[in-house]
Length: 145
Length: 201
Image (tube, rainbow over all chains, first blue to last red; front, side):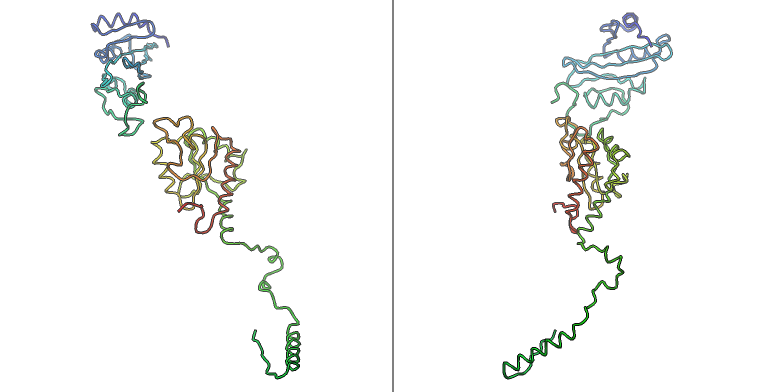
């Protein structure tokens, strides 16, 4: 498994979706949260990229913003990519769900919704996963006690 | 025995009457009265032990504990180690781990109890028939341990069910758990027929 050159990939995506790429270096590709679903669809369905397998969805809280981290793999092309997006709203962070593209995102997005309070638009069944209904707060946020 | 009062007039006559009474009594008592256990055979007589119902019941209970298989985290492996051949809990009558709470009378809570698991712990405890005992095994079960401040962990099993023996350790060695079980034996032997688990009623 070889990491794809995300710097070049970023240039290519910036041509297709104008204004979608925030930054692109060797490690990761950071895109705008508005364009996330389009970019993900492009990555999955373009021949030559063929990212058919989403291994990890996770999130991180940097206080100024939430960062969504997607790690995807192409079993056909034998390469991998780290895709990130940043959500600057703290009260109502919202991002498009990637469950319609990769079924693997289903439970991980539910877990992120539970522990970070990030809402996923287009998720078929967005409920808490680990904690019980009526639990106050989202424990993995930095400002949770 | 009926008391015979002879009708006499002088002290001397009374003494004679008393002497006759004693002599006749002696002549009646030549052979011993048979013991109530004479019907028993000689071998059996030597093996009879007198005790109270409380002690006999408690003794039987003490040596026939059926623990509930209730492993929640890493402590469960020490519990399994205790039950397996090396440490051999069967020496203490703790033979078969039951999967059903209805067939068990000792719940060894081994591992971190989260608040999401807590209603299930209580339900399993309620399903166990009386008399029943609880061993809290390991730091997490006793007090929440490392996770005491956590939002998701119950800080101490004694908030959910009454605990008889606490076995500290992280996790406790199988020897510790065996020692805890001998302490439980010491508690069970003190039980009475109306309150076998010495619970506060």
